[in-house]
Length: 285
Image (cartoon, rainbow, N blue to C red; front, side):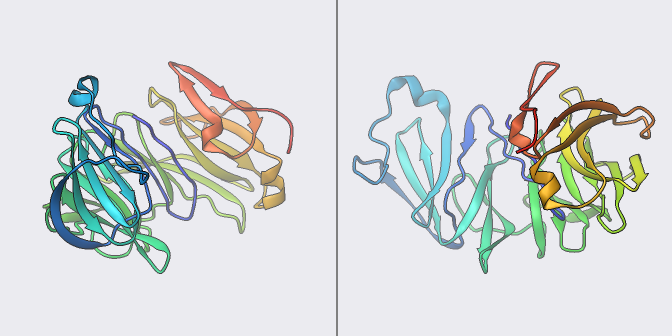
């Protein structure tokens, strides 16, 4: 699985690559079109040229190109056009049965819209006003954050429920049971990192400090630590020089903060190799 967290007012982006279903983000989709099955052809438009025997068991690839949402079935070497329009962020459900994507409304992502991986009418199970969303890690459940800062959950064809209120920048735990929420604010500077149970909505305050600002960087692979960048004030100039990266036990109430490194605030400058953290650390810009 690949997980990428981007900090904003209430944002999480989680892209799951599952063994038999790979989602590739492209230029997008909006309006449903009649699903049609067409042979994959050669050409200069990037169409699949052939399906060697070696790749026949790799399943499905969904992508957006030239305003179309398309699905390539590698087993049959066929392409299915699912929809046309404007969208982004195509993602398979964990079992590969569903596809979800964000519509673009006025240039901003909204959604998600959910369809079966074989096509069909779309639905919006999380309801309106969703500003960020993700599939659960192991179940066909969608989680979204709406404009009021509420965490909403729904199955593709099920009822939606409000899991918790007051949710900020978020990241799913490696076991998929908890959500880390960053409610830090600039004026006056205050750090607050919480964990929220996705089953019950119960909240635990992991770290709360006055006079300091945090930006959530994510979880350790074993789920024991939350990583974040710390600073004394909101400043784009200071952020461009990097902030200290620190770690706090996810259940310790902030009593044992560990300094990790000084680095720029780029999530893709961090990666894990087993239990070891690899960070692009160093001096300022």
